[in-house]
Length: 275
Image (cartoon, rainbow, N blue to C red; front, side, top):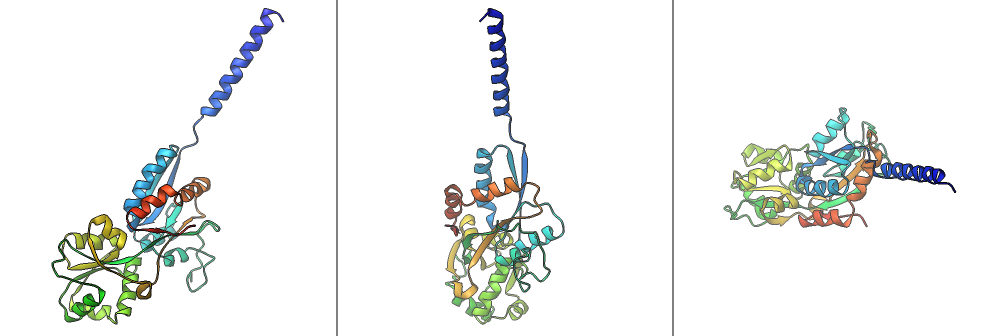
């Protein structure tokens, strides 16, 4: 083999190796993934975002935290969203064409079929400000004092999941929300964070919020509602069929059921529901 031909082969090999290296090092296309999530997930999903973006530098997670009812309305109205995580099945059902007509009377079709999961379970807590100045003991004690007009309770609006769970608790305790409102013993919040803030600032004697929000805010929980009182507090999650980034959305959903994500959810009191 002559010297010129050897040089030619070396040059070809060098070019091939450079081309392969350049191909291997080509970064993935950047993706901005928009996730609509219940306000009660703010702290945990913020931690998960940092962990996920560290492992997936091509993906930027953009959150929209609010009440599940507000998020559902925004999606229905045309907002861009890739993944939806609700604080109750109701709002997810209203967007899921596979739900029956009672649950989805508008026959809305936004859930990408085959991606919906029950992600987490929470609890509905009766939380009090530091030191529990009113000395509230439990839900039974709360019912008695509300009837007597002796405490001020913060609850969620009727269009948000925490407010809907509260209505079930009132029904279980044979309390009339309308009568209590007329007595002036109720204040409201448009999402669970607003209710939590009222309790934290001690502008009320107590509040009905999620156990995880009470934990994150450093509040004392004096009682927790049973499933008999308000049903299970299930958080469903799904990729939406309006996504422009299905693969990235599915990948993020898969991360939400990893041991790393479970540890973050469990640290504030959520119970992962996946196997």
